[in-house]
Length: 202
Image (tube, one colour):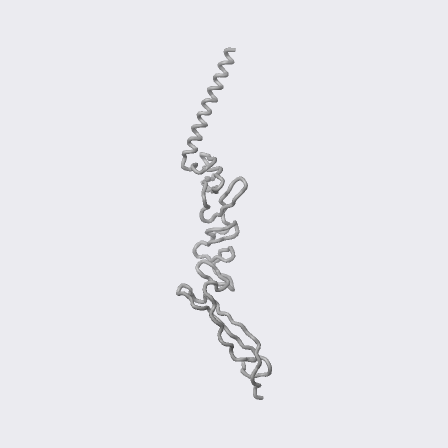
């Protein structure tokens, strides 16, 4: 009976010491700078679980990863919301500074142009560079008024039989000095059929 009491008191002492150690450790966890915004934190790996609205950002630190809870993901990453945890995921392209998803870039690093979610070293055919984007249409300035129709031509001559063609064009309208970039707004033209007014002399 006496030995049983000794064993029980030893067990109680161990539990009391253990709980004191746990309290100490969790107190360190709460006050540690790395763990301030975490719900769960590891001394070796930083944040393991974040509050609902924050994103867990894992940074490689040698062979291990170190976690931080952030309101917004850093450059080259995007925020992916999940059922259990929100994570910062890396953009696939190294030329991408900000992305909406792994493969859709929204801002490129300097020296690259953004076109349909991709970062390119030069704009594709049919588009033109403006600041850091490739634009397909003249979005900056309204187009000017149409010119008068040209004379009616058939095979390059002003005379001929029946029908010829005539064209008219319009360029960019009034633009600010910032918008006056070389070939910023391509000119537009249209063609229509016209009746030839005179026959060519034989």
